[in-house]
Image (cartoon, rainbow, N blue to C red; front, side, top):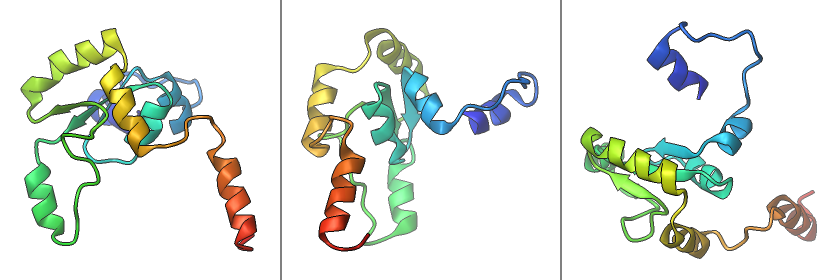
Length: 133
């Protein structure tokens, strides 16, 4: 990700090539690490293994207060969950080498019903039915 690259590497790896879009990056990524971002759904749908980094989960939920709640839990997260930086190296290696696990795909499909690349079409059709467009 361009922001991660700048923060991590500074200008050491600046390229004259045009920056890739987030969509291009997600399509190419084999592993996606996030905290609570909905981008995890997009990354997983495009084929990335997802690792949720929840070291600060309780503090985050306390900070935002009620009625804030995390939409995913340990039982339905469609990726490995890291609670400390020490968890990450082994998880990244496993995700990179093995790809998406069958259990993760199953959990994802209980949350995201469609996986046929026709969601925009479905949404447009529904908006037309409701006469919103």
